[in-house]
Picture 1 (spheres, rainbow, N blue to C red):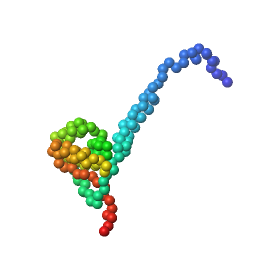
Picture 2: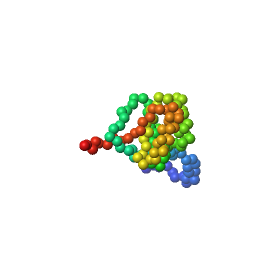
Picture 3: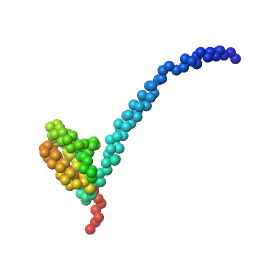
Picture 4: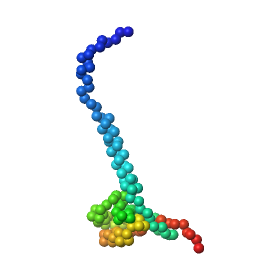
Amino acid sequence: MAGKNFDPSELSEGINEINITPFVDVVLVLLVIFMVTAPVMLKESLKVNLPKTLTSDAQSKSATVGVAITKDGQVIFNGQLMSRESLTKELSRYSREAPETNFLISADAEALHGEVVRMIDLLKKNNLNRFALQVEKIKDPGP
């Protein structure tokens, strides 16, 4: 068997550069995963327990935006947690650009009544009068 002669000077050269391309690829994939899962985790962490009724309104075919109010008074507008200031700006934008939008208010059963009234007042102040309160329908207990 003929082989190449071992040259110890080749060992001293070593690796002079590190390939970071695989590392960047992994980091970018993780970033995309976190960006996709963050809104889902936010919705699940802020639970809204809807009150139950025997009747509910039929679904409308026009554009609908969801507004959720948690028992702590936090407002989730169209899937995003918003402060009062940013909510006011967003509603004024809807008033200018899409006044026919329907708003579905989902308030936790333990949310303060005043928070729900404030939300309705904000909508009316911006001439957004197409809104409904979301409830869960319970089975008819019978006579």
